Amino acid sequence: MRGVVRLKPVAFYEMPDGLWHPHSRRVWTDGAAKELSDRDHYMELRLIEAIAAAKRSGRHLVHQAGLSRLHARQRLLPISASVRGFHRSRIDAGFEMWDLKRWHAAFDEWRRDHPNEARELEDLAAGMAENYMRMTQLLAGKLPG
Image (cartoon, rainbow, N blue to C red; front, side):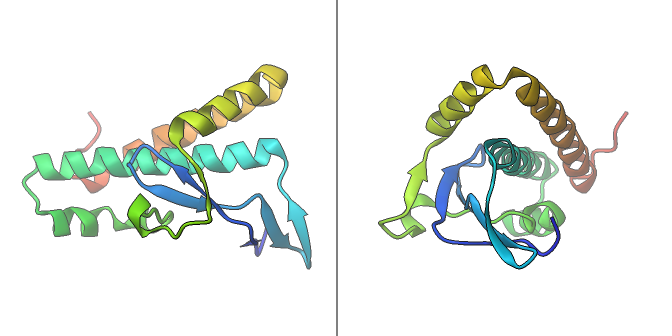
């Protein structure tokens, strides 16, 4: 989809980096509002999850290399700029909140009813997670062996 804009309502989803990331199932694309399918919704959440996990791992690797918190943030900017998470205390009341266990449970339920789509989605998500982890290692100065 080209030129996608998120529409209200926006919900926040907890990710492995401990932050809450905004996501909407409604998008504006090609001149019209569109509701994401369950498959696309979960694919996007799994992408955000892969990036958030890579950011968390990258912070650890950069800290191990002796860089300050500021330098760690700057070093990982190519990854972290693609998704923006917020501490729970920074989110106004009234937004729907999905903690990690809750949205994983909803995904698991969908997966049981859609095993073929879920398998394809899981393969794509695993590949994305692997690529983001490789990028994180490179940015942290850990060249693959």
